[in-house]
Image (tube, rainbow, N blue to C red; front, side, top):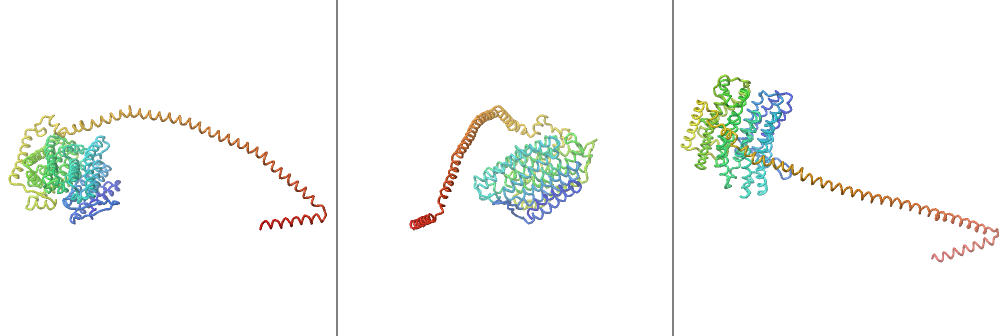
Length: 637
């Protein structure tokens, strides 16, 4: 049973692939597979199942649905159902859609394996499969040369962080002799520090934290459903999820908490500024993704994993809603430029649904995302005053960019031509996500914090009255600032000089720094090595080859002479032996034969002489024979 959340989408993807010649059936099969995955995950989650599968030898793949995995194992296919439903009604060609649905379905299977993993070997398999699937999804429209390039950039960046996971797995095995999460309890302090370092590196890269954040811009090359699923409950969520699950053990490492809090807080502030400065709708949402996961890491570092888990759940719902609505805006307006959209008048229903997601992103009560953000804020203040103030500033930024995005993308506008109105399936998917986002507001009811603690198997801290007032005041301030900027027609630029805004929107120059400090030096080194190979190594190889050819020719000549001499010697010896043999035959054999013949002739002549006809001669011969016989017998005895 515990393997069902992985097997169902895997088999479903195979079924969709088998139906590639029947696009309508393939689309239906993809959605049905996701619904079946939700059901299977719900059944498994209720039983807290565990299991193992023998790989071979002493290697086993261990899985378990415990702790926050009980929520994630359901959340992933729930979001995927809406995303695949949206994609199934997409206006792309049938063949392209079927291929996209197949990879999306298998992407869910890989993420489910990552979620239920109970050892580092299984985690690595799921982790790598998620990365490989994301590469295929981002580069889906491969006929555009820019798409495969963007997919490669995202893949290489996250793969660099993946090395940390290999280090962590190796350290656990070296210290404890096993790779299960439970083995972390017996890992020595030195090795555990190495494990924590590897996991932080892997999580920071996967969840797009500084300095790895820019890879999310490359991921925007993928189709809208890919962005919606990747940013909400799958790939980007993997890093935060693994830290949430393993924090109880990793927190014993002295440096773990401050480092994780520092990474999260810097990313929350930097990503918030990026989202506020961006003029591309999807890239602005990508910046907000990094910022929101930064807040989750702040909660993890502060020790309140339930707050991080709650915010991850809320973020998955409203961020998938926002990305899908961004796809509608692209198809309807033909652009993602925030200065050219304002589709609220043309698409009022989509504007309302996008508004629900924007309100959740801005943490406006009584939506559930506001509850979880306040829990994160309370944990940040518990970690330290400056950490709390930094998290509060990040919260203000979230309100600013959420309100800005809503007004610029789906604010009222006149004379906007709609190129492709949204289809019914797209509206249904958006409506379902908006409904779940609103429904999450039940967390404000008494017992909401206890519900999150039980679901996430972690701790949550209720905010003080002062923290609540501060949070709500910052939300109000953000709304007022955006309203003033809207009225003054400065919402696109936010009054920031173009060069500075471009610098911030481009992730604070991190891509440029990476190009200058890493890409270009490596490229130059590769060029130098190539030149060295052509000028030095190639000449050296040619010299060695020439020397080898010379030695080969000399050896050939020597061998030819030696072999010829041996052959001539053998031939001459053979001929000489034949000549001697002929002479021996002529002289020896012939003489022997003639001698035998002569002897036989003499013997015949002498034997005739005994035939005289006289009897006494015969008696004499007989007596001689008898005497000889008696003598022989006597000697024999």
